[in-house]
Length: 390
Image (cartoon, rainbow, N blue to C red; front, side, top):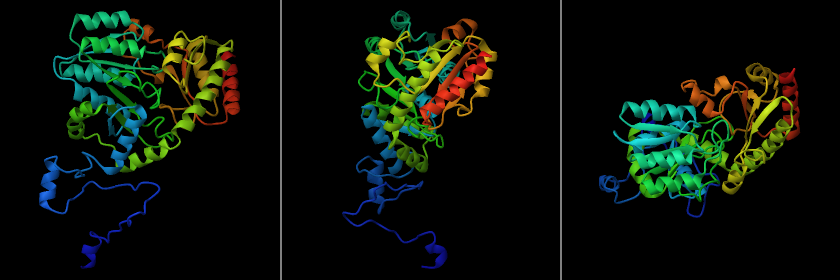
């Protein structure tokens, strides 16, 4: 074999029987092959397992899918190149022209866009309610056939809590599927409820380091089977190296999440006691209007603390500018702490009534608590509050 040929067909190295890599290898390849045409055809007919093309499946991404499904308490999973990709592909796979979707004002801004604008262009209608309006959900489901009820809990950014048991029961009775964005709560929460599809941004707590993007749709196997072809055809596949980085991040998921929640609780208490703060939106506080519901549904209350400053937008700007340890950046769930101001939260497309319903005011601030020392974070927030109050 001449050298130009050899560099394209290098020697193979296979581990001997009984010898295993501690960290699984990255299958950084687009293509896979079988030894014979007959084996290839058998795979295409679904008569033998294997891999052919990474856009459809890959051993590294498949390992991630199986782990996420187990963590969330479901049979199967599809991973995508971003969290919004998982939402978009789930919505496109599960709806058709003439369907109706129930969604909520307290929903991630890109999700609202996808339901209202993208699906709307293809003849899918929607009704947007408040997440606590269970009577309105019941009326809407009784008034017309509904394909999906799409919700999140805790909501972004005001951390309102959906009554998961009630929403899923109402949807099931009406013959609608439920899709829950479970990113804030994490993979270890809400799995016991009758949710049909969980979607997550893997960019957040799964990765943990803020250096890789990904998304996931997690559901029972029959739903995933029906969605798989659409996901593959839409092409928003997660790269194997990104899947490897997320798998690596998940090794520390539980210790990170719990440490971040513990720090978030301390910061929420500090904020609640400060005269510059009108209210704190953290479900772990007894003063949160849905604390009892959150305590029934959740093991941990999350690392997101939102609050309203009494002096509005100007105070919010002073607060954010005075912080030293919080990056003024989007996203959440990573090891570094982050701060977001109202201008960064979206919602500008909502009418005045729905903006009020969303709960975001001119003085609303969202903090994502990282893994810095809690005392340092508390001191930083306290200094910024004094600057906001001046």
